[in-house]
Amino acid sequence: MSLASDERAALCLELDRVGPDRPTLCEGWTTRDLLAHLLVRERAPWAAAGIAVKPLAGITERAMASWAGTPWTEMVDLLRVGAPLWSPYRIGTVDALVNGAEFFVHHEDVRRGEPGWEPRPPDPVRDEQLWTLLGRMGRVLYRSSPVGVTVRRSPSDQKVLTSGSRTVILLGEPGELVLHAFGRDAVRVEVEGEPADVTAFAATSRGI
Image (cartoon, rainbow, N blue to C red):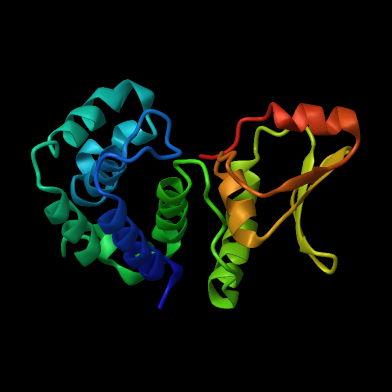
C-alpha cells in the first residue's frame, strides 16, 4: 500500500467519526468544506484551478458549494472509492506522487482542528515515505525562506532542503516536519539557529 492509499482510507475513517461540522486547520473551513475541496480536486479538475490560481478562486468556490446538499456519508464514500476512471488521479503513479502529501496533511488538518490533539504513534513505513516526500518537495515548500533550511529527525539523519550562508535546523518526526513545511503551526517541531535567523525564518511563508 502507498502513503496515498493508506492516508485516503485513514482520512475517510476520521471523517466518518467526526462528521461534517468540525473545525479544521484550514482557516475558515469545516470538515465539510475540506471534503468538498478534495472532491472537486479529484472529480472536477477543470473547476479546481482556483486552488492555485487566485483569479479563478470563484470557480472553485462555486464548485465546492455545489456539494452543500449532498449527504455527508455519500461524500465520504465518494472520496473512499477514489478518483473516477477518467481522472489522472486514477493512475497509480500519479496518485502516489501527488496524493500522499495531500491526504496526509488534510487528515491531520481534521485531527488537529481542535485543542487536545496528539501526534499519531510512529509508523516506520509511513514515516519513511514522509521523509522521502520531504526531501523531494522541501526546496519548493521553503522557497521563501531567507535562510537555509535543514531538517533533522535524528542526530544521524538529516536533509538539507535549502542552502544559504545562514541556516536553521528543524527537529522533529517526519510527519511533523511535513506538516510544518506545508504551512501548519499545530506541530511538534523545534527550530534551532542563531536568534536573528530563527526570527527571520519564523516570518517565512511555507507551503505550495
